[in-house]
Image 1 (cartoon, rainbow, N blue to C red):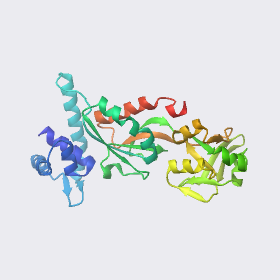
Image 2: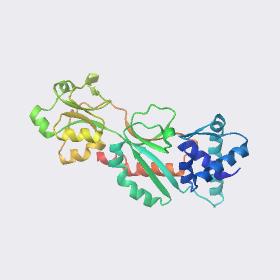
Image 3: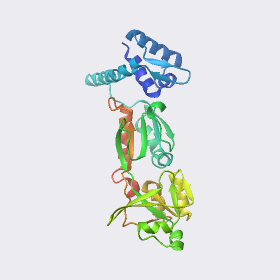
Image 4: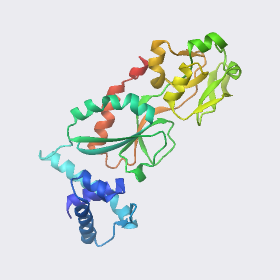
Amino acid sequence: MNIEYIKLFVRIASTHNISLAGSELGLSPPVASMHISKLENSLGVKLIHRTTRKVSLTVEGKAFLPHAEEILNAVDNARVAVGVGSFTPQGTIRVSAPASFGRMHIVPFLKEFTEKHPHLKIDLRQSDSIVDMVEGGFDIAIRNASLNDSTLVARKLARDKRIICASPEYIKKFEEPKTPQDILKHQCINLIGIDNWTFQTPDGIQKIKTKGSIRIDNGESIRDTCIDGGGLTLCSIWCAYKALQKGELVQVLKDYPLVSDTAIWAVYPSSRLLAPKVRAFIDYFIGCYGEPPYWER
């Protein structure tokens, strides 16, 4: 059984695309398709369904996948043990990240990351939509949220502390709220999907349903609207920290911290075979961000 065929099969299972998986391994689409056919012939079963739009695993393919991953892991371990191989990160790593966080805290480090790992290529897709990792063929997804998907493995990159902000001009004009209840007297700029702000108070948890005429689906745009005096907003420090440092924004309601379990997570579909490129990416960015993360220092 050819190890290169198995490696190709594992990448196809992740990307759902024969051409993409083949290109990552330096194979043309016809050669990649031929290698999979040879693997299927050697096993005597059909491993993948081929259509014009996508590739999916058969029942037999899904059953074979964990064993294929274990085979590759065992081969890598054996090569390292006898000194003829290493866990050098290589190939293409496909990463999905939220648009604002990606632009502010991933893109600035990509040059140094690729210089440190010259055998790696980065395919970064930035979107505020939650992507289907398997469907999209992603190795890692960066998420700034609370995690609910138990099918994913996650590693925390940094905490995501959120605060209530306003511009100095807005505070001067409308006065600073002193308690969460005072928010009801103010215009609020809401991130679409977050209409309630929840606070820890001496009397327990207090949830405020905010009101306002502006709702936006992007964190940087919300921050900029707040800087322009559009109202109060809930903002992650990683997004607002430069504006806070410049005095363009000020934190309000400091004595009433927001209740939140969000963090910056790196999530990936399976822990059975954590590829060196995935481990390298996660370890590098944990080192970049630090604890506390640099945007809170």
